[in-house]
Each structure stands twice: as C-alpha cells, then as structure tokens.
Length: 293
Image (tube, rainbow, N blue to C red; front, side, top):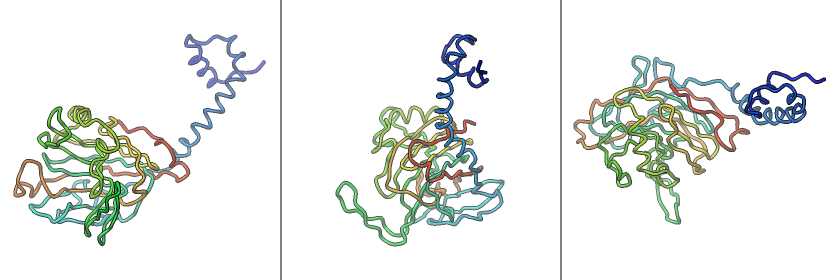
C-alpha cells in the first residue's frame, strides 16, 4: 500500500474541508501526485526568484552610486538617510539618480516628507540631454532638454493640494500614484485606470503624515504596481519605457504656499533596496507581495 506524504495529507485536508479521512488518502494519491507536480511548476519560478538577493542602493553613509541629474535642491547623506532639501527656486525638479539602470525589479524604501513638500521616486527614469521628439495619440510632442521624464511614483503628503479630478474630498492624498513625467501625466489614477475619489479616500487612510511610510514598487515587464504601507495602490500595464535609473525627487514647487516657504523643507529616504527580476520571469504578473511593515 502506498504511503501518503505529509504534504499530500495537507492538500487532502484542504480538498475535503472536513479534516483527515484515512480511506480517502489512498483514493486520491494518484491525483495528488498530479496536483503536487502542477504546484511545483507554478511555484518553481517563485522559488527561483526567491534566490535572487536584495541589493542595497544606499550604503547609509554617503551618496556613492548616485548622481544628481537635475535641479538645485541639496541631496546629502545624514543619520542613515538620503535627504533631499528644497531650495526657494529651482529651474527644474531636482532628481538624485542611480548611476546604474534597471529594467525589471522590486524596489522598497522608507520615506518621510515634511508637510506639503512634494516628492517622488522615479522608476526606469530617463534624462533628456537634448530635445526629444515623440508622439502621443497622433500629436507630435517634445521633451525639453535638461529634464527627467518617465514613470514617477508620487509622494503627495499635502491634504490641501487640490486636483481637478478628485472631487470627493477636493484633496488628493495620491502617494503611490503613477505619474508619467513630461509625457502623459497621470497614469494611475488616470489614463490607465483607477478611480480618483477612491484613490483619495484610501490615501487619506493609509498615509502617515509627518512620519515614516513604506513604499513597495514592482516594475516587471509591462506591469507596474505600488503599495503604500502594505496596501495596494496603483496597478497598471504600460510599455512605453522598459528600463532606466531609480531617482529620488524633490519637486520645484510646494502646494498652497509661495516659494519662499519652500527653502529648507526636506524629504528623507532610507532602507532603499532592490531585487532584480530575471528577464525570463518578466512576462506576466509580479511574483512577490508587498512587505507589510
């Protein structure tokens, strides 16, 4: 008589919904083998990916591996954080970017932004060294030189920022939203899905003002997903940009305040780490769920 493995018994308990029945074990063993084999095929890519190690993008001491791409804000390392400090005037948004480029990855970091200082995390970011012509919806457009463009996961800490699509609270709270800098503007909520009012309602609940927040980002193939403090925020598919740098942004304006009050406002980033996804696993849905701490 064939022995039943503990894993098979666990699956039996799930199938029967009523505990372990010994005589059923031997009836279902052949089918269980097929089920176990199928589970192995499903979980094998995840097990393979689990072997990929996390890469720390910040050594906690200095800005090795980073370079300021644009803007006049100050970026420096202090107390185990990368700090972006705003100035009263800057010709462009200020972005500190990685020297390396990445295509398919999982990115995690913690951030804390001063009240009403807008910021964000560029993923697959690109720099326009010269004017870049492009088209969208049949219209010829250009990206001006000296600017960063592409996907930006927004950090939107201000409860007072008004946005024409957010009618429920007349306030955004859109941290974790996906913005297409210098191109199509809001992707999620926006062009590629998401309800603005629902996004504002959720953001109001999960964002921690004047405190640390955890951001989890997955860019895998065409799939872009974000989590804020363990809660899924944005999920959309887009193929316009396949690779680029990781960037930390300080925007060149502040909500409902004049620029004189912007100087000295800070956003802090720490625990910045990235896990690359093998190219053969980059088609389809992301393979990890968010870290919920």
